[in-house]
Image 1 (cartoon, one colour):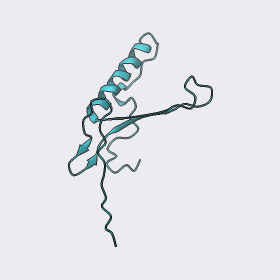
Image 2 (image 1 turned 45 degrees about the vertical axis):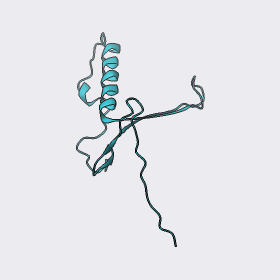
Image 3 (image 1 turned 180 degrees about the vertical axis):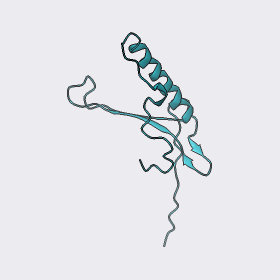
Length: 96
């Protein structure tokens, strides 16, 4: 009988190459994904980028800025730009 040893591979940030492992909590990372379908310029291409917390919120900050610039002269401005992209808050157990 052989013993199975479970090992969790560390997920490193694809931007800064930092470990996303938090002692006692496992890997904590964000993911940017795309699967382009028929009719797009990138038909059949799939992308996945793992981001540490710092790089994730840096990328999100950049996207918020782009959103503000693109809507700079719109009559209606986004009400709560801080919530851009957030789908849940205080969801500690991923139940939402």
